[in-house]
Amino acid sequence: MEYEMDAIAAVDAAWGIGRDNGLLHSIPRDMKFFREMTLGSTVILGRRNLESFPGGKPLARRRNIVLSSSLAPGEGYEVCGSLEALFSLLEKTLKEGGSSRMFVIGGGQVYRQLLPYCRRAYITKMERDFQAEVFFPNLDEDPDWSLAEEGPALEHQGLIYRFVRYENMREKDIFRKGSKG
Ligand SMILES: NC(=O)c1ccc[n+]([C@@H]2O[C@H](COP(=O)([O-])OP(=O)(O)OC[C@H]3O[C@@H](n4cnc5c(N)ncnc54)[C@H](OP(=O)(O)O)[C@@H]3O)[C@@H](O)[C@H]2O)c1
Picture 1 (cartoon, helix red, strand yellow):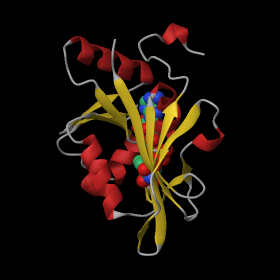
Picture 2 (picture 1 turned 60 degrees about the horizontal axis):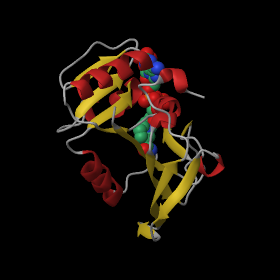
Picture 3 (picture 1 turned 45 degrees about the vertical axis):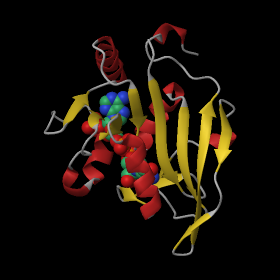
Picture 4 (picture 1 turned 90 degrees about the vertical axis):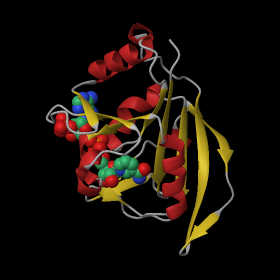
């Protein structure tokens, strides 16, 4: 079954992604990139990430699927209580001819669990250490992942950053759980 699941994140120099259940830094061009990439697709996120959004509201014009064992479904989002439930829902969606374009949008717990099933990771790399509390797995040190594209250095208010794309050399199929490993 064909599906396309990618991760998208902004990381600091230490692969940090968050602190105090918020982002480390906001770069308008990165926000625009995120919006353009994800509009119209399915986004998969953790309960804490949802709570960090303005008003705790899901992202507009995207199908929001929240992983949580404590949250009830709400306006504009569905909830899956486990990875198995998530994979079943995605399988059902694909069988019914729904969108197969999905983005894993964090936070840390969700990236860690779903990265093995992602084909690509779109990473905005910031060249500063913001002393994060939550981290993205360091893909430079992961033999399963390879750097595919590195954009030029960009600058926002003195902060240097670049858009980088990694590819998963050993992507696992969420619909063939028996073949993991
Ligand atoms: N820089 C970036 O690109 C970026 C992107 C996204 C988020 N962030 C940051 O990341 C931080 C949040 O990350 P986080 O790791 O603390 O939390 P998270 O991954 O957003 O959410 C964790 C919660 O998700 C639920 N969950 C996770 N795995 C599950 C599973 N297998 N089954 C059922 N539920 C599951 C649990 O909710 P329950 O407790 O309800 O069961 C868990 O407490 C924030 O600081 C946020 O700003 C940064």
